[in-house]
Image (spheres, rainbow, N blue to C red):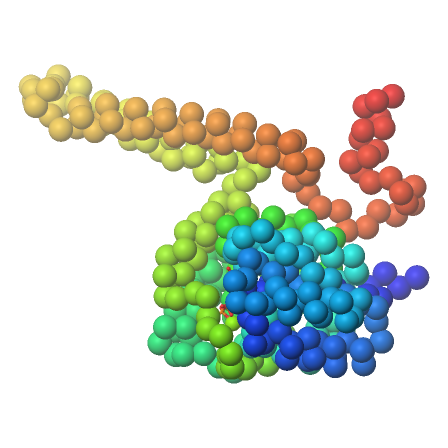
Length: 335
Ligand code: UDP
Ligand code: MG
């Protein structure tokens, strides 16, 4: 049995007010997928469009049973729409792309071939990106550089939605807020083997981008969250506890200095700013330690409540095929 073979592909596309692009998108996907000899489904997620996209999607679904439509009740954002589509996918590999035809579906077979080489996730790099320089390409270059440096994940273009991901990996990633931009990093954190490939990119022909320059600060804040998750989620005390201990040490030192100055140099204690520093640092240090403990509690609750593990299994050999580690644990605790 070839474990890396991809028999079927789920294409997931978030759609928000893309009415003019939809027929072109369908044709482009249909051309590629009918010629590619794999089972496929196109999951088109309507993210509360108000421009008639919904009616067009319904027509497409009526005409072709490969088209599956999810209509969200309101506009929940690109991450939510992608997440809804990914959770509903049933094929071996999930391919995500934009609904505005900026990504090119003809790249899909090449990306699937890369997955079959043994990768869990293949992400695109819009090397020849067709967007405005000043408010799109430059901030994106800076953000990608910063993200790569901070997370240690080598990446040129996180903003490219065109990705192919093994379904079990894609369905494990939690896309809250606007986390779709960090999918490869979150997958890498869960042990996925990732590869970057150069993909084509076109200018938007119809409709307009849903994001402006304001995304810069939001991406920065998301980066902080992601950094915390990948490095400290399992043991927050390592972060907060360390800061707490440093503060306590500083408090102790400046307290000792205050007493020393009083005893040997007759320096007034209440008039000494070091006294304030020591009181302040000691209090802050205690607070950080308490936050660390709450973090540890939160982390345990996070894994327990979601029925998740702080590790991810790729294969299990010589086990009963139908029992996962989780089920195995339940069976043992029930016995
Ligand atoms: N999108 C969505 N919900 C939103 C915003 C965007 O489903 O709230 C979809 C949009 O229809 C498109 C994709 O996400 O298919 C990417 O959006 P856009 O092209 O505006 O982003 P950009 O290419 O400018 O980064
Ligand atoms: Mg776009």
